[in-house]
Length: 173
Image 1 (cartoon, helix red, strand yellow):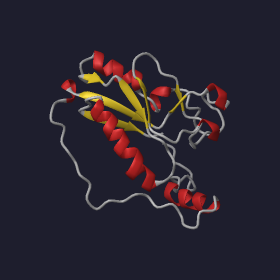
Image 2: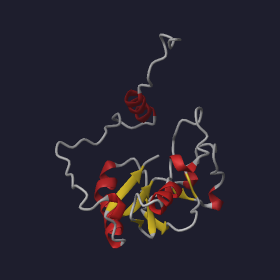
Image 3: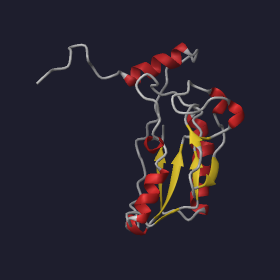
Image 4: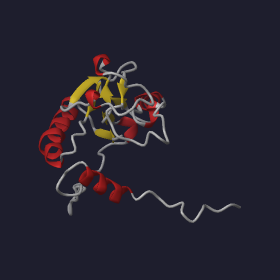
């Protein structure tokens, strides 16, 4: 049995994020949203009979925005700032070059890790999920808790209700 080196420690993600925001010029380090009271609504039916909406932070591919494929460098031009909806049928072309992630240790070549639509379609075919909504929805990553809570979340909820979703799966990247 081998042991990890003494310096092999977990990444101090929270502190790194706070330091990163300070380095970007924000006057305060990043603060995660915290709620003392979080409402929870149990699913009223089994997942095998429920209609599921997929919510993602992946962006629809925009050819004019430059390189966005797997392993692409960070690409702010591909970022989106408003909630979007797109057909869930087929194989939608969504990408994550607009997001900051550890490109040294992943290529993001497997979209099932950040946009599991194909896996959800298989779960429907196997009877594990009742159905998918006809659309999936994109949630912007604008780094503003206020905009997320006051603008994006209510709009996502409205669209999920419009699609008669029983449950939503949010897959942040």
